[in-house]
Length: 519
Image 1 (spheres, one colour):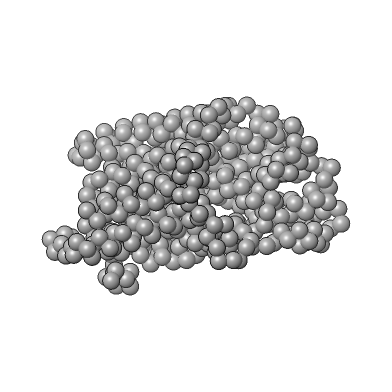
Image 2 (cartoon, one colour; image 1 turned 90 degrees about the vertical axis):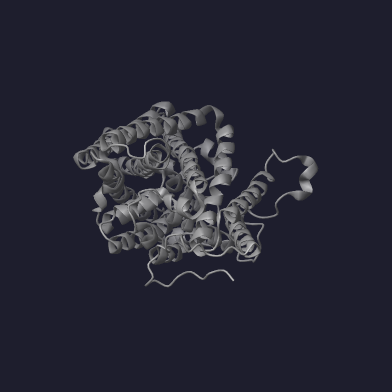
């Protein structure tokens, strides 16, 4: 356990005060529903792009990517490599698709295609996953800081959740986007500083780092074999493509940013900027993990016994936080801890505003008060932001004692959210698919996801051991999505469902090349 210097504390406090102040600054512009949920559709593309990047880098990835590279290799880079392709698809088709009309919900389009059940299903899945995500992000922020600095875990969770909920409540989506942009700069600066300092601190100079890392095969991309039972480079690449398509295609957090942009050009630019900034920064995090491996391989006496035991068990997630506190100069440690907070708070604020928006648009206005006044809508937004903040914070506190239960909850959230991408793509790619095909396809896809997820857990009966999934867990979303698409296409052909001429025309831009209709 190490002591945080007064200078480091000042750096951290200045960051926290600055973020909360910046978020609160936009209170006046967010005092109406359109401003609170869509920033009056006036945001420049560059700031939205930075906020997209900030949302991508949560406290989980800030710690997990260096930990992954420390304990194994650069296999995770395949996820980043898939991002530009997903961004191209998003700018080509998803952005214009969502920017037509006045909806701020990513799932209203599903109701137009398949009915209210599809919209409600997708919105409920998003809300469920955001609760689990917020809890995980806050807990994984508090845990390493507690282990290193002795700070109380519940206090860290309450401070993080409380401050983020406060500025999100006041600033709305515009405050969220601007604070996310600031936070993305902080975490990028912290990563760059670490990436430069570690090689300079090697006992025999930077060249020693490359010698040690190369001798331990740390720059390997993982197995290049064509197998589906292990997280090979190709499996991670395909997984990354589907996850990134899910983010850009159906995640309210991203769709809301497209809508907030002041033009289609700015919306497209934001996607490209967010994607192209994330790729080098993610590589930087992998470099940090590899550099830390070489650094502590050359100086093993610097690692405490508890951390050495974790490393021996194949877990390297604690190394980067330890180096931040124990290996960096005074002031720089404060910057890096602020960067960890930035990674967490940017993700939390995005989830909170998206959850509040769906609460109003997909539930309150859809089922209870379609003609709710602006004042009434703002009350719903304020109350729901607060409630979702309390639920996320409560989830993080619950993880302290019952983490195993919440791990199961996370798996279940993944099971049901896994059907969202397939449902969206079915409606997007096939104009002939109708409600019966969609329902049966989603049920089939969720069953596949359920089987692939649970058959590798203790829940699965021993008598069914022969029926366990032979596939790597990264392929759950891949097979689940493809199942929904293939079953949906097949049922559409089987039922020979003609296109409904009375239904409104395809909202996609006719000047754009359209996805191939199924044969």
